Image (cartoon, rainbow, N blue to C red; front, side, top):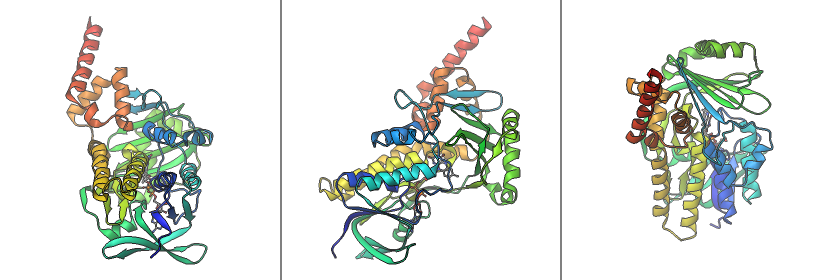
Amino acid sequence: MAKAFDVIVMGARCAGSPTAMLLAREGYRVLAVDRASFPSDTVSTHLLHPRSVNALARWGLLDRLVTTGCPPIHTYAFDFGPFTIAGAPGMDKDAVAYCPRRTILDKLLVDAATEAGAEVREGFVVEEIMIEKERVVGIKGRSKHGGTATEYAEMIVGADGRHSMLSETVHPEHYREKPPLCAGYYSYWSGLPTDGRFEVYIRDRRAFAAMPTHDDLTLVIAGWPYAEFAENKRDIEGHYLKAIEQAPDFAKRLRSATREAPFAGTGVPNYFRKPYGAGWALVGDAGYNRDFITAQGILDAFRDAELCAGAIDQSLSGTRPFEEAMGEYQRIRDADVGAMYDFTCDLATLEPPPPELQRILGAINGNQAAMDGFARLNAGTISPTEFFAPENIEAIFAAADSRAQKMNA
Ligand SMILES: Cc1cc2nc3c(=O)[nH]c(=O)nc-3n(C[C@H](O)[C@H](O)[C@H](O)COP(=O)(O)OP(=O)(O)OC[C@H]3O[C@@H](n4cnc5c(N)ncnc54)[C@H](O)[C@@H]3O)c2cc1C
């Protein structure tokens, strides 16, 4: 069977389009398909931490985002009630975050894939994964504009999200799974400026966050434990506003703002899936998912795209055996996200911080270097392993003791 493509990518959002773009830039014949037509929204908030912004810069796409008028975010502020820890999420040149609408970000990524030479078929639904001799060899699908098509390639990449059809077909090993832990709902508000701050409020089994996006709007998401998901679904607005009432100053600001969109939201499971096998690979949520409370999904999708495209290039070009190249993709992915996965799942329970963490938070408060570190931890700029390393925590406590002694002197 003659193959028109080297690689087919199913799904063309944050994981799929960059994978297609990077492979097309290497000269591969790439087809990317998505059932959506872009610009297209999706159920997701869209904080882009500084490392994701850095990926856009590396790919030559950051200027395009900046010219859309998306406001930069220079400070992450975590309000625990008695005190607020506010710091810089990035470092040096990767200083800021953005919160671009998915209608704008995903379209920008799709266009970049097309410009790189990939064929992008929008409004195309994959209905079947073609398998021959236990190897994935192609896709069969239907265009919204009419007509069916079957396409073959050396590699089929599933960038098709949490309900990945490719994953469901190949049944990869699942590991470190956890059920949904938190449910979150969001909307967009006008008249609610945050002055370049990502504001997070942590309260009794509730958390909410506000972040500035396009068109002078502010996205506000509020969450509760997943155990309350079904019950609270009956009155999302009531529970959303009640959560926000736990921070009276913010609630007052919200009361003078105007809601500009319906609520959207959900809860998501947490899992790792083995991301490769004979003729196939998984990137983004299709291969690994964690609760959205730490807003790591787009960063993870971008990292997967780079790692997986690199591994596929090594394998297709014959510079490295498939198993070795893809095995390294999996190893680096798992090592990069391992500690953040645990940190995210702990936060997503919305349980009060355990006593030791409360002591650490108290010691961080007022120490600007430590507050920057805490912001960078939550941004994924530094890993939980680095932040919670004994020597870092000892230094934070020592600085707090010294501040206390000065105050008492
Ligand atoms: C409520 C919520 C809030 C979030 N907030 C943030 C945040 O602030 N920051 C952040 O970084 N991440 C956030 N995330 C996570 C983020 O949305 C995801 O990690 C990210 O979108 C994953 O991108 P993806 O490309 O892997 O998958 P998706 O965005 O799910 O894209 C998959 C694509 O595949 C297509 N597709 C699927 N099946 C088929 C098929 N059979 N045929 C054709 N096309 C198909 C779909 O149409 C879709 O366009 C949030 C998630 C949720 C649910």
